[in-house]
Length: 387
Image (cartoon, rainbow, N blue to C red; front, side):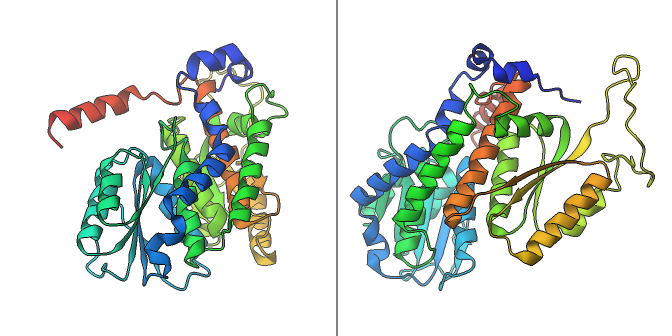
């Protein structure tokens, strides 16, 4: 079973030695990213997206660490958007996309094959374009040639995982101006403040017993994690969390959104990672077990429950019932409920705490959160085969 060394995440020298590319520092700039991106979007003419007119539909293309941008826009637009918002990771572009539609393509480098191909095909068909990425890039050139709006991501953005808010902010601003989502500039400013508050709470110098991200990391690292949201907003935060656990901490995890996945998750409580051990009989933990003589302890199922400040009475009751069942089954339960505020600020809080937690998991396991030798090897093999 993985064992997180608490001393490693409370020691600034240990953190500096493993965090070779400053992942924690980059995550701490999230609030600044929002404010910088708002300024860059205004300079780029964000108010003129789709020529200021509501499109017939919106299609969003984003891949890898940027993919959550599309998921967040779709989740926020789900309740009130008067036009459909769909996600397309790569070509082919749906046949119905044409001059009446808006295509949003997001890529930090501006060179990701999927968004670039989608943007090029959309431009060929005469669709309106909004692109977000590096200023001097293929994606930016396509947008300019098609008379679209391109928003630069700013300087010092080297990883899409730690540059989420540089990529997301212009997309939400455009969505607000077109009436797809309710995310005015004032709400984004609240989200920026919330991100700054959580960067302070989760800072490396804050010890584990008072740092919410380190506390979450300690529980997650020694469990088989299932990250859940209690609704659409927290559901997309849960999806982001499992992506960060995989890409940053190298921990496999699954996610779900209540109420749809309640029965699926509860079924896990009868499996091998709870106190029953799959036998249907609760077994007490042996406090006298010696990990050297008896073998490593079986990891417990870890339920990470992301709760919204405004879930509704029924959703709250359902979540409480699931967590009571989880505790009775012997699962480890980790809860985080956001503070009240605009939807984007509540989402930002969940993203911040889980982003930091995933990074602390990596550091506590002795892993550099920004360097994956196997990923580098895989990409080299792909390039060698001309793919």
